[in-house]
Image (cartoon, rainbow, N blue to C red):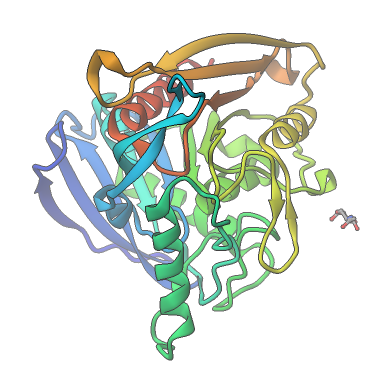
Length: 354
Ligand SMILES: *[C@@H]1O[C@H](CO)[C@@H](O)[C@H](O)[C@H]1NC(C)=O
């Protein structure tokens, strides 16, 4: 049962002119869904669809607006005494929308249908170089701790380690919810069914990777930032194959790249483990090739670019690709040029998938 109510408005804040079409999908619970199309969209030609899953407690709009100002270590730059150099940085997680709309893709950003008052990945250690990240985490925990039962964070049920959704939970309803969002979008827009992609950040990234494990046939490709998959590889036994790109910063202290345990002691895997689990799941041979590239940072020519290590399995079943990009010195939030270039590269990667 899905009802649709459409509102048209133009978003001038985006680099490209885009038309926003909000609709309500009544699935397991009613949550707003935002769809964006470029102004070139005419409904006559089927267009690829990108489903984007937000991070913990942050709607897509909130995530687009969030800026953290922080004194941070400059990646791989040390002074003469061997001490990391610091400079003020403005950190974001933006650029995916713009990159998708520049390709005239349909962009849909549903909100997680379930809520929780427990931030299980808010146990960020004091050694985090990014004090604003810590403040963000304590702000969330502070809100949760107060007696505001009406306030709860939306969270995707991406794995047993990243979220404990309390409202409306059954085992697989987030998976069904995303399927129904896609069906609703197909009714509303001219979607190229062979070119449906899903992307996510953090808990939303775990959820996108869960879709790779549980609904691989629905997607041409999956791209996630600051996320992983189930620690238990038996939870990822797809009946079909899809391509997966994992992107992670080495200095991520919210979802550490080396894995860890959440505040309830439930383990989540490192980026390397997730890469291997998903490679196995997608029938990849164990030959891995590696190359390097860079991403820009703020600060002009005096700042070195971010070093990116790209690893991929040479051959996977059905010629899908499983790839991992490791961003040196990058945290859970990124400098704007790095973020925008990274998401642009991720969209190009998805677009190139055969
Ligand atoms: C791993 O997942 C499988 C499948 O859900 C389950 O049968 C098994 O008990 C799990 N193992 C552990 C150690 O949790």
